[in-house]
Length: 553
Image (tube, rainbow, N blue to C red; front, top):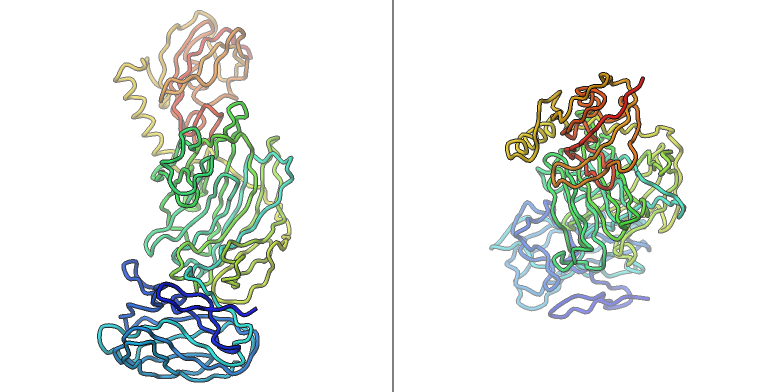
């Protein structure tokens, strides 16, 4: 059924003047170069306005289903000053003078013959500027047989439709890690693009182009509850809590699209480069919470970097609803095509086994569902999925369509002991420990390779070797707040010393059997950037009180 555009003083609606006449609202256009933030070039009330730059071209796009003749007219409802503009349509150009008028005025441009179905553009450029403004245009009138079934975006939102790949998992799957890779091809790294690799029920993780000079790695986790806008309205019991973040990572709140904890790392990622992402979930069913940690591999260093770890309340689940997406988050350049490749998806189950994900299902956002934008795509190239959107190219896939890729067999090699922030974090830990010593919070006898210790009792038994299996009583706590994360109680624990964290291996041989020692272990010689347990955040300095009862080969 034909849709109608009603022109009034406030807004536009779809309007058909006759069976073969349509109006494209001028506010749906795009400028090249794009308008600056402080200039409102398009308005839902007046269409194209404030066009002052003669170097700037303005374009509109539409899709023709029925080839034939097409007449173009420009409608204006503001005074024009007589500038001359050039209009390009379907291989023809027209020069017209925007005559002065205070009333709604129709300016005839010309006729073309549309020879085939497909997307077409109308582009206007300035030939001769007269006065402050080049032209005011409220709408573009199209007449003729080619308008039958014509499609264009009728709304003010100019973003390309966001597109997604959903990776189906059985409900019984206990996925504690999700690994994915992204490669953005040359020319697709447009401003205001978000290529998201690892999405899950409570958050998302990917890369953005935020400005001509800044790119980011983004990791965010949503709060519990239903507040969509203002995080100050979220009760503390529903808020995610930042537990740790990497060096030079910015962490704060976010709102307006749900609320939660946001973190980003400014990083100059490049096109044609593969980037690796992994999200790890550490569940705590007793407290109904989950710690989500995002790790990003830095190709230049060959090491992983912690972006952030957040504790999400009212959860306690493993990773669910896995997906990727590509988003144009500001619509001023929504006409440009974006594309990204997503490859080598894996999950690690709670039993430690890795499983490759070979199936995805395509979907799009409300802009696509409403039919406002129909230029999107997805598919498989080689052993990778891809997503594309924008560019005003015909869609090549249907909503809900499944895609299948061939396996790579390349299980992720994720060594979090190779930490890109290790040297910086070691300095931070050293300063933290020294500050605690100077304040009298802890006492030390000496240190061994940055592991500080205080020998409480030397012990009169045999010396202890790293190769020994030791029987001990111990208590472990965090230097940051003194909270106890683990301890023996009635019975001692027995384990091979050389299988414990490096800090134990360095400190425990300082005493003999029967002795006791307090050990302060920097994070790099403990669990580093890993969230080892629900009570030990990444980058934690640990304190252990240890009594050795026995040591045997």
